Length: 290
Image (cartoon, rainbow, N blue to C red):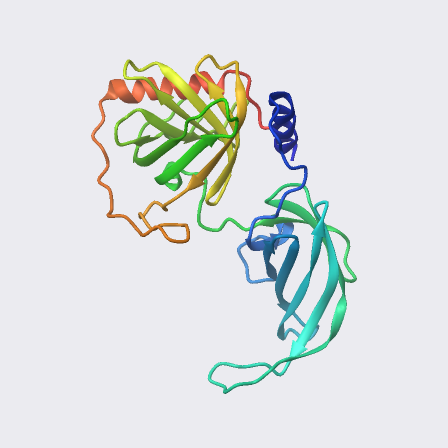
């Protein structure tokens, strides 16, 4: 994706060390062209250190369900390893049984162009596009609710935004509805048109309602990567976002517990107007998704 190429370029200009390789996101992946809402095949990917493990579910030629396991090293965003088959393991209600490998269907190869998109070549098939399966976070305002942590990566800007987004407001010119913090000083919005289409823009305003700074992210499930934008709109730095709780208040991490459900804040229209104007200012400042 060109977005990540530009992020890397910005990092080089700022003197920030940015990895040229990246890990595909852990989770369920699908062949993009087969994501039609019907039962089919898919696979789970998990990468730890430089080892990738893929468990795939699919079907035999007679229609019987089956699964495969592949594991090996990932290097330079590429992976190739045997797609192994097994039999004889535990079934529901069985006692202790050990499965055995019965063979391999051939090699499976993957190459990733971002953490959420890549291409796969199965045995006896042409290369196909694959993508991280996002089945629960559609790009709606409510999907941005929850507690988030936003932070630039440039050490010369020692700041971070720890915010709870709880209240849905009216849309900006290019978005589909603001989601505001309890204090009315921070808001995020999915961009559905314009130069920043497909990204999420977040901004903080001062107590006087002026733009303090903003962010533009590409978001996938609980993580976002993109840019920090100064209040003038001219300076950009690498930035990351992390969802710490989902919209229901359930923690997404390792140790943090769920929080008590939050009541949406009662914000004035003037507050919402200043946040909407700030998001439009960032969206119109020449940021693109390329």
